[in-house]
Length: 207
Image (cartoon, rainbow, N blue to C red; front, side, top):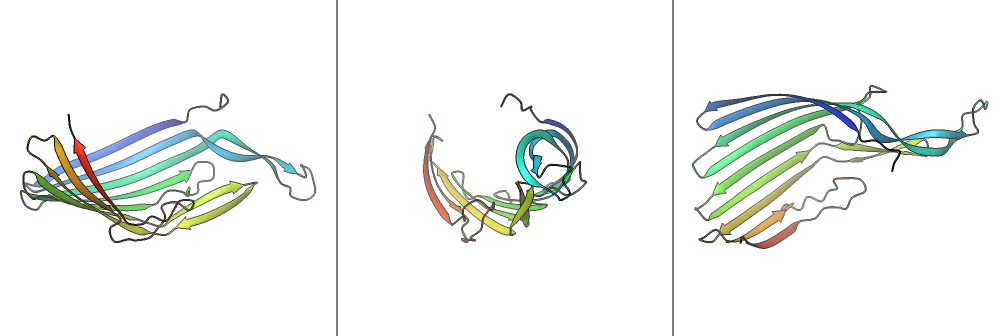
């Protein structure tokens, strides 16, 4: 659309990383983003029109480059080498997005996320990993003809697994991956599908 503009984003980040021991590394980051001119829906006409004695209902909705928000996020991560062949990682993030016009929390993004990784190098050619994702309850909103509707997606935990074998020469790799291996039926968006368990076998050739 020739009347839309690119959104503007100003980002600041401060991070710290420390090697606590020969087997433990920790990082911490703080982010601040200011986002302007992103596309939002606005009521531009009502019926009856002002100065009618009663409140009107939206008769015309338009998409405008008038959105403005501030996003704050904090993230921490710990890497732990349990053995030479076994490594783990734990990551937590908190995010708060605020509408600059109303000073209210903007819905549509989870506040809390927790990720964990356990990776194994069983042999030089055989490796595997186990990943866990935990996402807090998320509320989504829509503005439809001047009225706000909302629907939430409950908190969920997703566990994925992968195992792969690389043949000598590093040209062939066979792997088996499992998505949502505990079959935790959930949606990641109110309009999305319920995500079932998936098992995928793959053969990769590197030329």
